[in-house]
Length: 436
Image 1 (cartoon, one colour):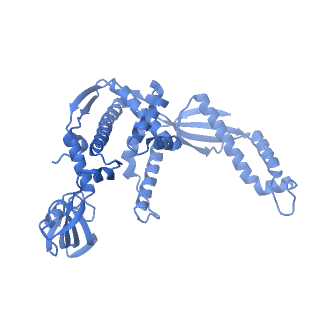
Image 2 (cartoon, one colour):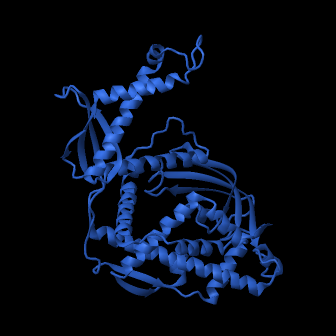
Image 3 (cartoon, one colour):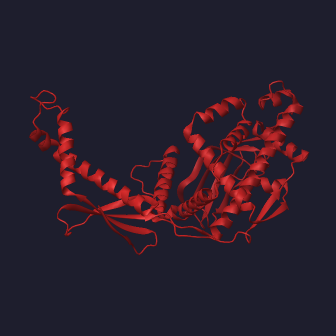
């Protein structure tokens, strides 16, 4: 039995009353007790011979709660189907006290529904699609990067320069007092990689083994809270300076990159293929970001609070797990929901938009599309066929691929309706390696 649906002040919130008839509930409870008595074990009685009254005395409350909960859930589900509701998140059930119906237990379900999404005109949305050609110099630069990653460092007596590996002892003080993270021994840094503050690296240049130096560093305003904007006095001692020795581009180098026969030409061809794949991925990513932004700005709808809260909770759990993996103590840690609110809203908004467009325009992932994406991904591995089998044997991985394909289908559908302008983009700019 159900009563009228009420719309709450929130555009998406609904209130629905359901009533569980007392007679039907009591009959259900009695039936459950009888079935339980057939199998329940109690000291002093053989299985199946425990008196009904004793079973009811020991398990009656639990059975009643289960029967009532299942009845409420069933009646709620029937009401949802009758009213064609698309429930977002979990409903909240509250008993109705002081009701006029003495022959039924009344409950009120408060819940949100998915929004009706209205998509505006997409023809005004603009997308600039990067067009980037991979040239031989780009392959050369990639090989140079791979050489640097395999560099061996040899000690030198000269002063440190960009590219050198410098081993130092250091200590910093603010207003004469040490601070967390301001001291290190046998700390290594490769100059020019930008892993330390620019002024700190600059102060190390020219120092040779055994050299010492004291210098001030002013922390930027976007640094950690207890140091931003403050000036520290650092004392540094150089333990060693070592310069990189890059491996030659020969058969051994090719073998180290997985080319078994050491063929350098084949190595270059494979590197070019990998670079071209990366360029394609980055172009697709830039286009997708612009399309999604265009969709968001063209759509009008409310975001269910229940979905927001669930996404925030998920992001909080992931953040705590990440901190724990980094070796930090996470017991009792409570990360504020505000830290994740904006990102959670963005993710939920896009998720609702994509799902709505997929549903209304038949943009679900087709098996052949999923297969193609998996095979393309597997090409970068030594045993592609093994990787393909691994994907198909992992349901959660398959679900991730299907979600990506659906997003790609939405992007293609949207691009056909948006203004798309091809824009020649230098390789370095696309890859984020362009120097300022």
